[in-house]
Length: 232
Ligand SMILES: Nc1ncnc2c1ncn2[C@@H]1O[C@H](COP(=O)(O)OP(=O)(O)OP(=O)(O)O)[C@@H](O)[C@H]1O
Ligand SMILES: [Mg+2]
Image (cartoon, rainbow, N blue to C red; front, side, top):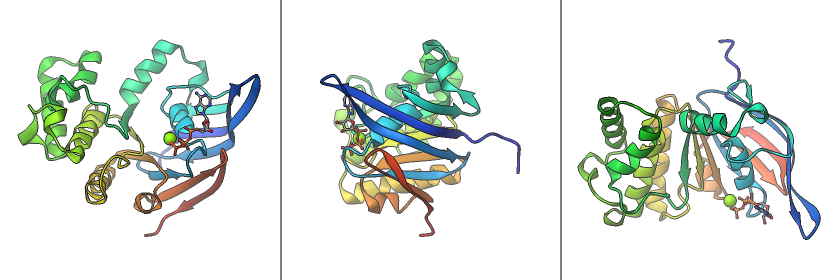
């Protein structure tokens, strides 16, 4: 074992929203750790707080209460600029609706975050082509999203998420917009990436998707009600 800190450590995370002058609690005293190389599904019914938790884990928002250490760093203490850098370098996001830019080709969509990172052109080209190859889209690099199937679009989004080799992939309902067969293909791709060493966190309300992860964390009414290894 190494002395590396957990990739993620949340301690008694709490969050709420003000609604009509009253605080509505959405997350309540959530605590867990996720280590490098894990494949975790966060599951729970609609409205249970999964996306709110994803926003915290992805440093898109800061919880009202509790502590979030990402790679040992307390995100509450970081400036907005530093948080943006961390998001770009440490986290690959995958969303239900793919969030690809319609006017850009698959290649350009994958390239964009690497441009923000100031990666030199040659390295960028290599990273873009490698990640599109990894998701099996080398033949479709110059297609726009509208010229691709749903599953292919999600694979472009996966390529975009992994191109910068972030330690962690954070996916919110990545198969939600896909039919069952295509969803399985996307999950197979996630498993392959996990086998290559990526830490993967998938948020889903679909138990059959969650069962493919190695660990399942269940949220209900904003509370962590179960955290188990999945032996399947
Ligand atoms: N910006 C906001 N302002 C007020 N309430 C919010 C806000 N975002 C989320 N909520 C509320 O917080 C609760 C949890 O929402 P969240 O989006 O985290 O659920 P979820 O588990 O992702 O649900 P789903 O499976 O439907 O995506 C819901 O009751 C929702 O209405
Ligand atoms: Mg959600």
